[in-house]
Image 1 (cartoon, rainbow, N blue to C red):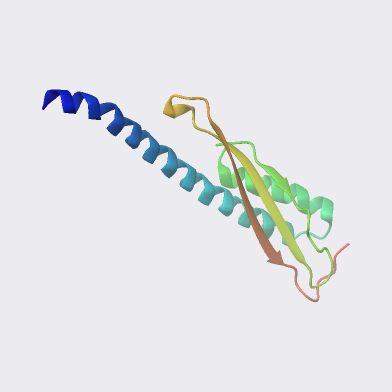
Image 2 (image 1 turned 180 degrees about the vertical axis):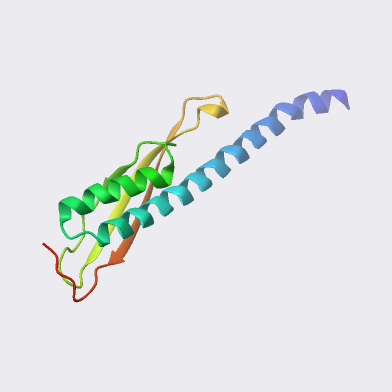
Length: 121
């Protein structure tokens, strides 16, 4: 009985580490999706594309709370009356706490419509 326990203990610990890592990746994906949503909302209320990119970057940074340095892209946005703002937030998640230096890139995208009768510059 003791031999089986000794042989199965590393397998069990490896399985637990996998579960913790997978849970952290799922949690990080949700956080990055929320940051993309906040960035798209912040960008959609700005009048110019330049102000929108600054507001989106600040919103994503605030939403992630310093857990990573987000890269925000507004590529694919239709900056016209009745258009849409597409915000993509990319963040690198470090899995060093598991005992190996793995980095997972997590990306979230959100699309928010601009008002139909709004002036954009």
